[in-house]
Image 1: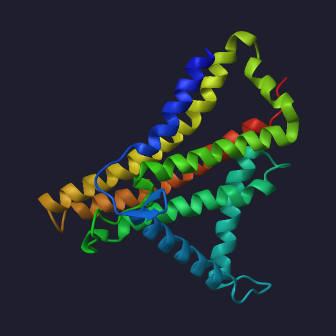
Image 2 (image 1 turned 90 degrees about the horizontal axis):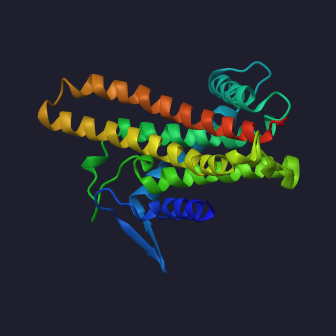
Length: 246
């Protein structure tokens, strides 16, 4: 049983070796990273910071313009955390859930809106960071660490009693569940973003100007939904770790 769990963990960790297409590699000593992922990620982070500065540069008692937009967005993200984690414990998790949603949303839309293919790199091509399996696995592992931290910080070692609830016979199933949660999160996001970009690319080559436009609009909608699904499920897993089991 335990050997099976370790095998699953080992296979999950080695997902970082999976490659789709060619990549621009940056080397920092013995560390090798995908350069195109970092480039687009930095651009998305810079854009999010600029929007934050725009919305908070002139704060008034009565919100207007950018401040009004940011307050609406914050309330929306608070509602996600509150509905999944609970009214009494959601506040400390709003920054994490909001960061997940905004970064994934920004990455997805950057891949769907910006024609990265016109920018030529020595190797590979620029694209949404979320169509790289390493990025989505990293998000999923962060969520795994988050819900383990949430459960242990509230219940101590008693958190692990959930593995034998409602009956010790469910121990292997409950252990496997904790490995399949991040696995499903990472592949769902990666698969949807990659599939959308591939469909748009193929249709643009076959039937340019007309067919790709509605597909791109559908891709924008699907990209937003994927960010919402990932952040909502992450908040749900954290809420599940925090809830009391009887």
